[in-house]
Length: 502
Image (cartoon, rainbow, N blue to C red):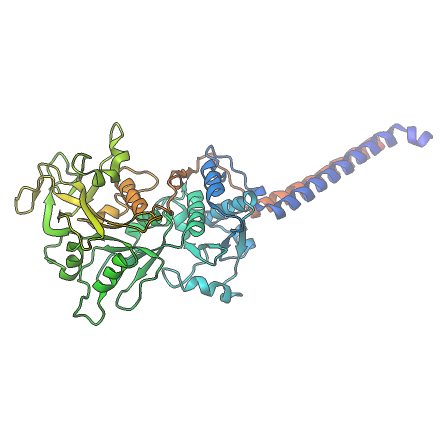
């Protein structure tokens, strides 16, 4: 009884008891946090930025609720083991992985999976066969649907331009899943004629716009490949050589005609002014059947509309509804603004058009979308007053009773620069090119496109953002669970000894 009432014993015991209790509390918190981190790796990601970069917007929630069917499932596949990603020095991969885990946490139809290409090359092989560069990099991310279809994205595609401070990961994930869930349509870029290829960095923004519209983007060599029945759009981007016609070993023009007439597909052709290429007779013959005639004369715009000295780069003029309701429909939203953004291009040629009909059961209407200004001239000095620069030929195919009328579109542009990254920027659009091409894609595949998707905002990383990697988290965990408790024990022991022998 005297021992328990002894002041030294009483105070010393209390010190030890507090020390033990504090250590036990730290261990309990440590176990809880570790358990949570194993179940939700996002738990250690501290997003202190003012832009909530890892939050999923209401747009994604709404679109998924409307378009993701029951039984649909997606895998976000990383080409590294999880442990390597969580300890990576590549901040880009770290950010994309964090967002992927957020999708997995919120949506029960999304799962994150990891493949080690070294130990399981068999799992990577199906992706390699469809990769742009016939290989899959360790930083690539694959999004795969239940159907087995997939999209491969380079890590750079999750960020705007070359800047890692502008994060477009949500738009990339959401648009890929919507495209895989709602459509298996294919958009081809032709190759074999000196065209700008679909994987050219200069048109990466336009390629993303195609993916947002629900397309799987591929290349096709019509000399060697047949057009897939799922194809809905073929793009011919500034060829330097003509296509093969009836005199060729393979009739590429016949393949394109069959695509337009039998598959009821759509065609886009962009052709720069080139003094060395007066005419591509086979390709232009196909277009002339649909009322489109490319002229080989370079546009020189007036100083009021020119972007560059000499007028080779310039702002085009919107066609007004009273001139053509069809052509004006491609930029109606732009014209409704108090200060409409300009549509721009460079090194352009003009296009003539005429109304045409190739079948009595089909009605074809040809109209300009953009023109030169009233003061434009050609390189030779000829007046080019309101001459077309971007033209649409729409064929209306009468359907059987009970079915919708179908439309086949051929869109021709007098400059391939119209779809380059210089004028198509999804994150900071300064020109109307984005919206005009979006309207064109909606016209060609209106059933695939959800107009809400491009509105998903990019996320900026503010300067006050703090990201703690798993390596750093482990270091702090050791400090908190070992170093701090050890220090408390030492202090407790010192206090105990001092009080006991005081």
